[in-house]
Image (cartoon, rainbow, N blue to C red):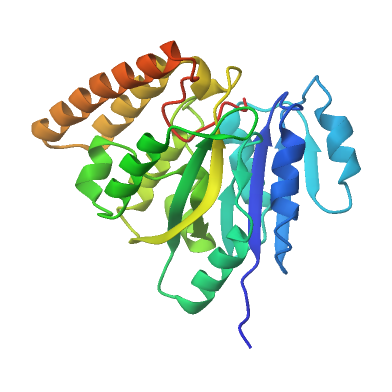
Length: 271
């Protein structure tokens, strides 16, 4: 009989009472046999705590001031006991059956240390949007190229999972980063571990005006560019990243003008 690994999912949150219950249900509704769900709340002032108390027996949660999203994730990682870990922001969702697919993959691929899958983009009402951008990222994802990752972030954070040994090797998330901390993490991890890909949709990333990414395209992409420069040694790749940023910002501004909220990467602004 196949023994599935324990999966620890961490949700950092701050004042996301309008969406967090949907996120919680998408995690607990997986019915994964060995799930540890940890919610790190940064002392929310809305109805978040009222919602968390409803699920107190089915998840672990702490509400206290923190130093931002990365700090909240790192606190959760230190609490986590699972062999497999991930973080899901408090406005994003797992697709039905996602954790079972992930658990079975790691159980049958002991050589795999981190895994990503496909991710949809949805609006505040949960309707899928930006299908062309999803297809664009999926196309680059097939290559699993380190050099391409230096130019653009094709890895969707809500659909990414990693073994405990990854954290033990590369550490936690950079707490100095307000934006794109996931991109920095991928660039650190990929230097030590091969990326594996599931060609299945594992999560949905929600775009809405109050999310961090949804409120500032320029800040998000500027952060990604500055992060990439930490790791790029080739002037050509620096130039290609800069060109890609300029073109992508134009695309997202056009989307915003057509009444689609700006969200340049798969990091949601929960803090």
